[in-house]
Length: 504
Image (cartoon, rainbow, N blue to C red; front, top):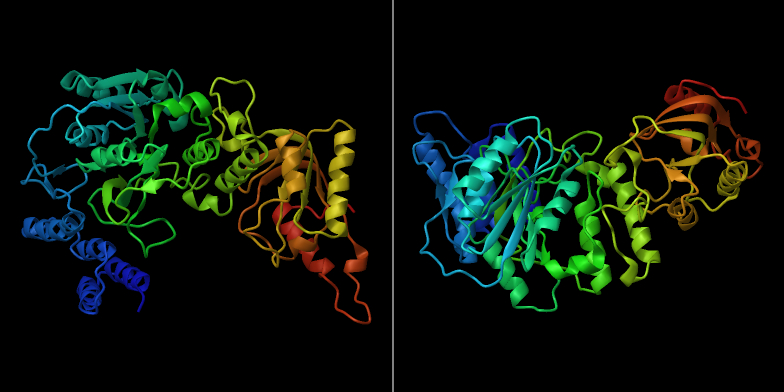
């Protein structure tokens, strides 16, 4: 059995309460020669949080398996901050170490915080305990509606390394990061989420990685996604890997900002774009992951986070707003000279288009004169017809949007065709992402061929008129072949999705 199959099966066994069977499975893997850090976390999961009288014993068993990770990596073990309380993400500390001398290189740690009053304290406690002492911790309150700002100011009173800033409006984490970046004075800059906990050696490891390689502009460390009770969850889709790259540990040299600017001010997914922009602008190799098999942070999994929210869920990187954003960003990177790859947060015009729904001030239901639905990745007459519809609408001076309804038999992973992406980059059309809401005067389905199958997510479209272009040659059988699609099935699917048969 493969390692990932063992981890996945163990995860499922724990979820259904068969913890003994999960332990036996993992122990068998050890007996068969598997010695992977992921298995240590999988074994820790077999000792779930408990309110019973033996909870202390269970906590120690869980910690003993987690600490095998750190022992294997040569790092300090972790323990409970308060031994009379249960093992939770807010009750952790790294074992005490002797004080270290002040290091020369300052690190600015930027923490965007929105309604983080319940998590900010343990996040900063983890930073206060860092072995790299020369820190500047910049907490940016993103116009929270709870006591986040007061908590941050109280922590600043305790430790003069903490600075507190406040946004007058809720603009999202990346806008908050940019505000923090404008205040940062460190040689190195890193980010940190307001609900994560970091091992005391995390920042030291990353700084030493950059100091030892002067050509490296940035690096990451790794994390494990966990519940508040320290059960390790894996990603939303993959439960066979419990240790992964931590996007919220990105550390880079402050001087890079002069060349590339700051984070894009969308509400999700800009961390990846920022890293890719740095890589392209500096011609760097892929950034190192420090201690790739050891999580030096635990990222608390929250149902209210943008990663878990349905509209901006992490799964939309495969199909939805995150994927559309990343494709648009990659296109901008590919057609722009490295020295021109700069994002200015205060600029009036974006460097590349982004889905309306993730902009800082999205319109609730943007309006367009015309929206064309097609499989724009086909290379046939249907594609040509769709482009003609776009061209005609633009010649009339209409505002035009497109939605890519990929044919079931097409490559779902292929990016949107270069021609349409170029039109979007030039502002000639707007690409609508699955799950977004729009209002249009005329909705054109250039061919119902892709609508033989209903996709799992499509835009919410309010329209005045629906026009369906039927290619009758494709709906009639010839002597040599069957028809390409069933006109009646396509019409039924159009009615189900859009509530109208349309004209045409």
